[in-house]
Image 1 (cartoon, rainbow, N blue to C red):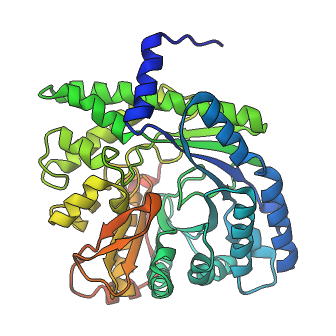
Image 2 (image 1 turned 120 degrees about the vertical axis):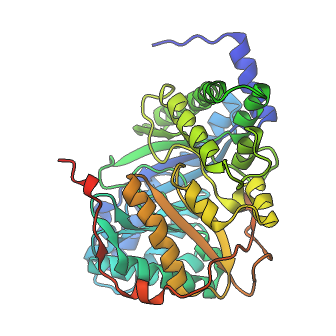
Length: 451
């Protein structure tokens, strides 16, 4: 099938890239490591290293070539692997840190920015391997540079594993005590998806092919620019403008995904059409909401504006790609969005408001710095609240909290690069210890019984 483009479309795309921060945020290669299982940890590590290096050897080179030839910035080239708790289940070892170190070494060898999949899926209960992986997380994330981890603690079908929720609060606390940056590489999910190209939560699901290319696009700045022409227009016009813009953004992602798939001889998986902000001025989801008429992101009306944005992005993007997946919508990571940072520093954007916003957007409470002395039970209670939103609303939600060692509310922690910086946000006082200590499972909602 051939496609025709007129000169206006080409010029619009050039302007989007040159002036409005349009980019492909990531080309992520998913690699199955299930065939690397071995009773010997040393042999398992050797198989894992060899397979990643073999499959992803040309990923960065290919991504850079596409950038040069098409003039489309590709910010990150990444690898996601099968959940390591599954890969390591056959190993006669208690400690999975050697596997994390192997992933880190392989990621550096192939030149990618991050590697995701030091993960466990325990939404209904633990295997012994899940427990070993979770116990290894604090060291795995603080002794590596590029390894990202995730744990799925709930789903709409299974309910919420509150034992896992309690455990993850302790893991985040322990990780932060070693190095808060380790927490920036750890996501706690409800309803985790198998084809997410974005870090830190990417892993290669068991229903995925042997190897696959997933692409994540971005473009908050492009949407913001388009909406500036809609001043005073009704919301119908706003929604239509966002849909048209999302179509153009996703079309570019589809082009890159197809080209990478062809050159690497790897199946094309999905385009994730999430609006992923950066700390750069003009590349902010918060700015989009403010252009709609809000004085500051976080005031009354913010959740409604975000709901419109998220829905319009999905509607516009789904028409532009043969396969849309991942998370697809609008991200609201506080530290990675200049507008969110400003709103949080003013005290307008609170954790409670962010929680309400997660009911209608892509993921959840993302890249939020909290006081360094926050207890494990409070961290677990925040995870439980967010998991409940995901479970009841049949959507993916996630938590990435960073207890900022030695810092209190109002102070700032700097993560560097795309992770940005964040003001330390207040949490409610009072103890959730007794609530978290109950353990067991919060049952799935009635509407989960769809069969």
